[in-house]
Image (cartoon, rainbow, N blue to C red):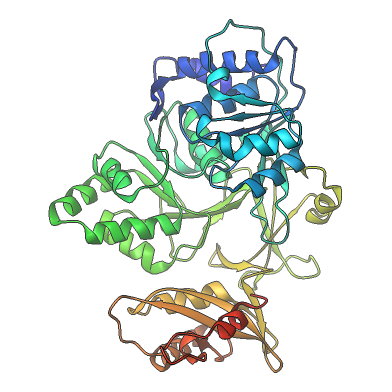
Length: 498
């Protein structure tokens, strides 16, 4: 059978699918060119039968046509990060063991040697996109693996997450319903295309709905503002760091640019933030500038998106809302027993959006699921008034001090509300009495004369509602040299085990 994604593309013939540096392309172009790519990849075979095809291609039309071509040939697409150095690309090649690698010419020097060492054939994108003749394409099964994305590797070597076509479809259907996608939507994309955020939330969701996706080769604050300022986009999605950089660019712009940028951004029907916690000051400042209340959501590579604030209704600062359509979410304690509202717990997710296996890691897969199919995300949250609030990654953001579990993210949020604090990072420094001694490294706004004792007093006063020990250690407390800089041994100790 033909997968619904490709059937729907035929339905949208005559509409613009992709706008990129290579040009403007319609849905009929995408169907035709991806079929030619599939034929060349098949090379006379009936089906790629799940063979892995790695591809290192910058965001744009070529990336999209190759991804679809791999899928339509029955292949297993493995997008590689254009930002990664050769050592990390080599890990993906060693783990995935692909049949071949498709490389854009600008990245040849990064991959050709490591591919040759492993005896993996390399195919240039120009060769793959050359005109050819139409060939019969294989019947596809939604249960087949279609995509392999690698985790960030925060707790070890990155693992390959095997995502089926059915998973992808469930993810885009869920987001289409929750976020009101339609064929009239026009979205700007500059997110990396080796993560679920850019691939599923933006690119595939747009193409599933017959919308237009405009792809930039990378992030540039002024280029993004100019496109938002044009006022013809309906959707925009980014990470908190990007919103912060856009705010900085807006602050530095002249009055006329500020006005046109703000008016254009205000024309969007929805702006979304994800992939990291959104600081409340950033949310509030963005709303002041653009009139847009950012929608926060929660997800990860293995599950797609699981929680979201509503399209219509209150979007509560610090909250990631409620479960998305087709997604079940629960919180459990350390014994895997569900907890009541207001009690912190570990997030577990179940449903058709959730992956089924890590590539060639049966033990890791088994450890990640309960016997009833719940996936352990490794994150902690609490439900307050029916809404989920993320407390952080159990292995990184949850500190244990004085016998209590403390969310580093919550403390960071409190410190960022101080007018002199531009950003901060909270970690636990080993302490024989406390276990983890809470330590905050603070970046102050330019020109601020705030002192360590002032920030400590502020922190102690405002952390009271969170019921955490008041052993907050600020970077000003650390040993400094004659020039006033923190000494290297102190910095090393600060991040030990953090």
